[in-house]
Image 1 (cartoon, rainbow, N blue to C red):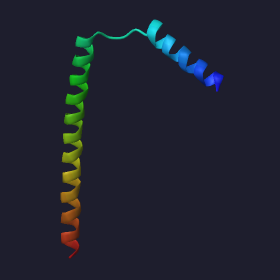
Image 2 (cartoon, one colour):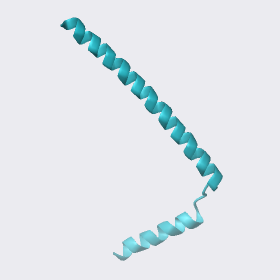
Image 3 (cartoon, one colour):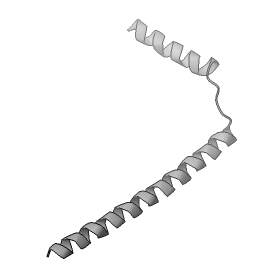
Image 4 (cartoon, rainbow, N blue to C red):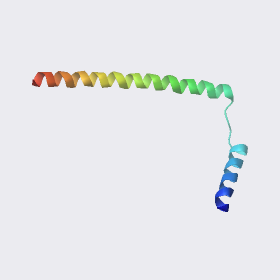
Length: 64
C-alpha cells in the first residue's frame, strides 16, 4: 500500500513540476477546434451512412 501512495505522490509532483501546461486561452482555442472537427466529422459520417442506407433500400426494392 505504501508503494501505491508513493506512486500517487510522485505522479502529482511530476504533474506540478515537469509538465508544461498550455495557458487558458490556448486550451479554449484547441477545445473549439476539436468541437468543430467532431461536428464536421459526425456530419460526414451521417451523410455516408444515409447514402449507404439509400443504396441498400434501392437494392432491396429491385429484388422485390
